[in-house]
Image (cartoon, rainbow, N blue to C red; front, side):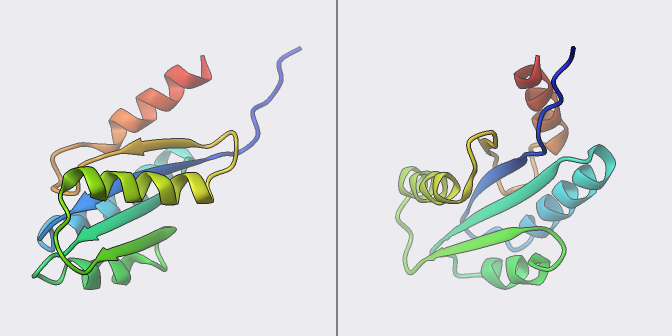
Length: 122
């Protein structure tokens, strides 16, 4: 007898510093990959004191993909940004959910996350 896994979410922590030109493409790719695979992605974008409209771009995607936006008033650096995103993901995730980090500069593909989730399921 095979036990079916309950539905789960994949929380994707995206540290972002002046990524207005890229973060929308990343969120769109997560949305598209979720539709194609049935995986429920939840983006957690941590805007690390950007001086561009990174946060405004993220807000535009809130209705399209589950998305949490954290904003640092000033640049705290990558370590603090990832830490804050991971802590928020832990706060929101259920026991069976998966948490990953990914760059917000559109250099990583969500397809890699799909492969990681498949490995976890094995």
